[in-house]
Length: 260
Image (tube, rainbow, N blue to C red; front, side):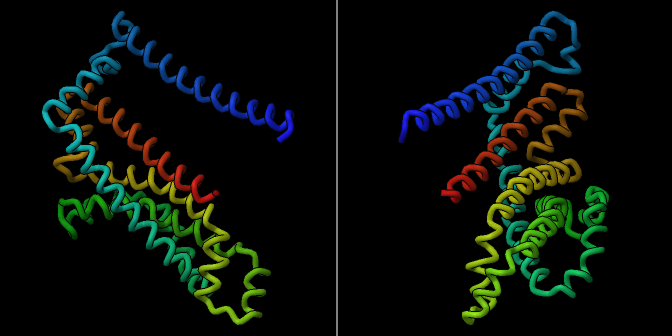
């Protein structure tokens, strides 16, 4: 590489490091201000909690053996819902792509279902399925599935028609078109949809745990609010932030790896 190319790459690297440092600084600055205002009594730490109290609460949960137990419950439910949503959305999107009539018939129903507040279905799911893990996972699937189907199916429909025609002229069947054109042309759309889905599934799981659960991060937050333990509530929210960020970064890492 030339000196200019090397300098350009170094500039990009320095810019990335600077952006990351600024992001970290913003978080640290917010936490420090929050802690100082709480210590000085400017804000009521009973209502807002504080970073130090959150850390103490997390340590107590860890020492009691409750921390990773609740994290695992929520994480497992989220991952199960995520994988089921991914599989169903891809299969359903393929069916919508293969049949234009089928797509037109279901389009208004998908729009209506997407606009329906899923939490309103919670009591029905509890009656039908029971107050258990299945109803929580189903809640997460319902929240993320329709958006996933709509996003992926639009990508499939906008696939380059010329490539498909060329393969058909060489006698390619539908399975070959799917494997060599449809999926490769839309893998970025699928991965971007999955990045959104992982967060949506987490939201759905927490909503389900609010309705019916005896464990999980949603249960911790709900229980903390019922006994006016704001430290527990804020600790649960902090855990959710870390979980959401971690899951997003994992999917982003997979996306970057596939780009190579």
